[in-house]
Amino acid sequence: MKDWDNNLVLQLAAEQATTFWLVDMEVADSDVRYFSTLDVPVVHDGHWYAPFDLDPAAITQSLGLSVDRLELKFANADLAMAAILLNNNLAKRPGVIYLAALDGFTVRAEPVFYGVVSSWILDDQARTAKITFSSRMVYWHKRTLRQCSALCPWVFKGAECGYTGTQ
Image (cartoon, rainbow, N blue to C red; front, side, top):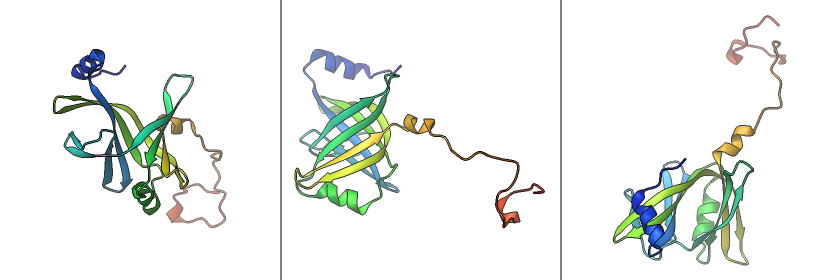
């Protein structure tokens, strides 16, 4: 069960909070981009979140009531997101999505989804980019099809392969 920040819960209960989304997305090694749906830049946990037109487009749940996939739809009118997607290999890069609210000048945020980039699509007609994040839990169910055996199947055996059997 998730423990929520009490101040954030009180703001949401009062229905007077300015709520918005924060997105942390790793695009390359040691290069994380920070996006916000708020129309002004905000700082959270020491990171500057740039305003960006994005929407959580689709949330896919499994029977266990866990979120398997989250799709974010980014505006791409200035081709900024296209440049990020086309210049980097985003496959399996981590991302975090937060629900946030403003408390005066303080940002209160709680992570609601952790995942990795599983796919992305650029739509030139609509000038949008859809990025799908999959939960790491989805990958736990994958199994190898190869059966391990006591015999080495390779003709060319050597000390470098680590096989120590006689056959």
